[in-house]
Length: 406
Image (cartoon, rainbow, N blue to C red; front, side, top):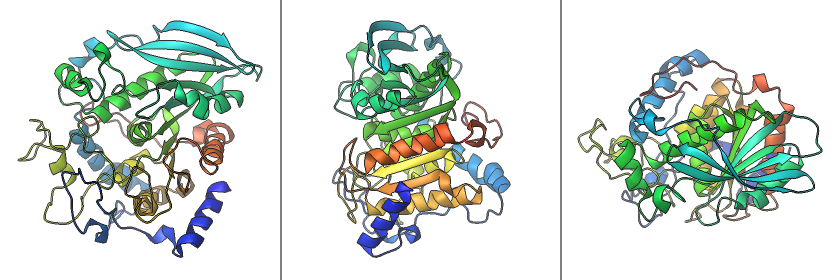
């Protein structure tokens, strides 16, 4: 009910029907390698044109998009040579254990790679029945550490019958204490070759899902993922390529790939880095996203990833109801991307499973409109909806290079 109310308020405030918006976001980032003047006058590409049934989506358009985005990311998981760096995720190290009134709080390090243990908090509900419980992975943003999501979302979740695993992206903390500014991406490329930062984040999240699934307290059929800012950027990709997660919340990622934020940076999509395996003359991610540079705007964008999440539940929360916020928040110009993705959900008969809630709460992890929205979303899709009805569509298996079966 609340998302519908916020939609109505956005309609009233702007004087227009947001469901009809289909234009690209204006490029306002001064650091963007592709200024693209006039992009805001171009329509976002349709993903259902020429499709007549769900089967058309699953057998025609969807495989095409999976192939494209796998070429962009390099890979969605380790190839045969990479496997030597990955072991048993269950070999966790518990560094601390504390009891609160409603949950047990454990500081846990997980072997994301054999020689790299990543920091996590594990929150286990107490005095709320025997379980197993739904579980949510919660990632922080660029500045607070991996414990911040406990106060943002984890405490409420754990007190309401969810297991919670908080963490952060490897670009915040990686091997040899590196981060996005001190060589984390270089270490990634040296070990794994063409595997973009966002591609590695997908696999790290899947490893966390594997760990949660090994716990007796967790119902592995009811896993969610949530992130803010940096964590929200990861959430967009997790929604598309990590089918373990049946419900995903991206809180203010700025969904447009070329708008007001930094998707182009080396630790995200690394637009200008030449990768020999990219099949274009330029061998760059930019040349895949924007194959026709003479036309304003990019041909490929994140509406494609939101569509790849279907039929699983996806919630985008924006922090600005301005026309063009000019910062990291999702604003009114984000509507077009959600509307194009919703066309796919509509084709599949599940339009209610994708939502965009536009708020004026700012670029923050919490707010008076933000908090009731994500809470209601997880309650609906991880508790109230039968587990076998969320993300139940069987998709043809794809090989490792083309991506995981989702």
